[in-house]
Image 1 (cartoon, rainbow, N blue to C red):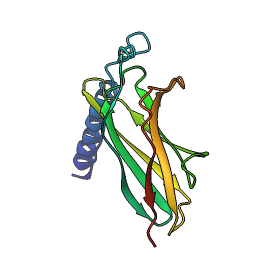
Image 2: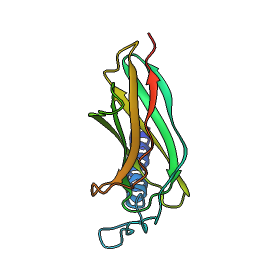
Image 3: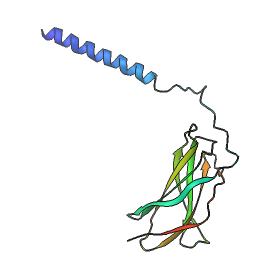
Image 4: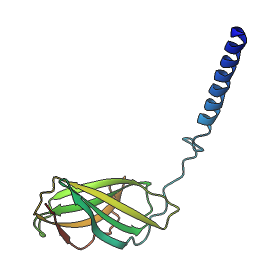
Length: 148
């Protein structure tokens, strides 16, 4: 009886291994030879919503905005230039995003760190592809005051 139980257990283990191997082999439909090329870069990328302060707490803030889908490389970054002087935005924060080329728009969220309570910050936003080329959506200067 123990022998029969052990054989069934081994058979179940073998079946689950085969199933997991076949599932792992089907995870990606792409190989090095058939990766999709970057989407055509939009002629004019523009902000459709925001930018705005999404949240500000615990010495950090999140700036959020939406633009039409910029195209180009799938790997993209939202950029925020910020500082305490609207004429000297010397700090830069960036947030990584992976574009969904089938969506007509992209939502960017960028975290600003080391924010001090009671301080007014000025910022502008833009985005760029993995190549470092800016999308050209630079916003006007906005501001927020970090709360205590």
